[in-house]
Length: 218
Picture (cartoon, rainbow, N blue to C red):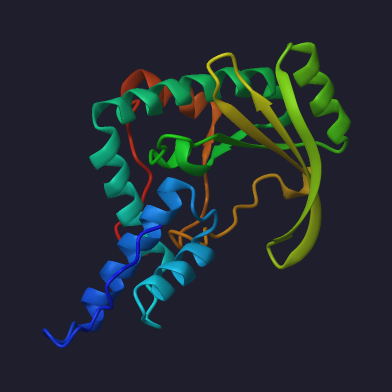
């Protein structure tokens, strides 16, 4: 990775806002290139590269990441989003009995090259979800349990990763039935991750397939 020039070279003093913007852009580029996988990690690396302790918010980094994806992917990005939303609906129809909810970048409308589809389902028996996926001949890549802090409670959820014929990867998270309808706060955008149910997604694809669900401020 190429070396970055320090922010203050005696040429002029950068404002705190300018520094935050530069760190946000650098962090976003690290995320886009896959050099960092999490926002916290990307911000720390970017601040270190630019020799500053100033760090932007996750929201600021997300805005820059969105700009970079538009700049580098152009019109194909919109085509990818529409396709991924159609693919998401297909998988959600298969999992209809488990109250599927589309979340993540495909719901937001910010999907970019390399994004996957995030779907949350609810079941008292995670194995039932796996059985339905298998019976639909979907290619299951991985099954794993992950512990997460969900609404101030530590819980363990099954994550099932599948790959569609197009190459798109889908991550299905199986939550408990008593978590149905409980929305959590997004640590990137600061709003509630309400997502889309299958019927709402179907309507969206008919009327406004590129609609975005991103707050104006973080």
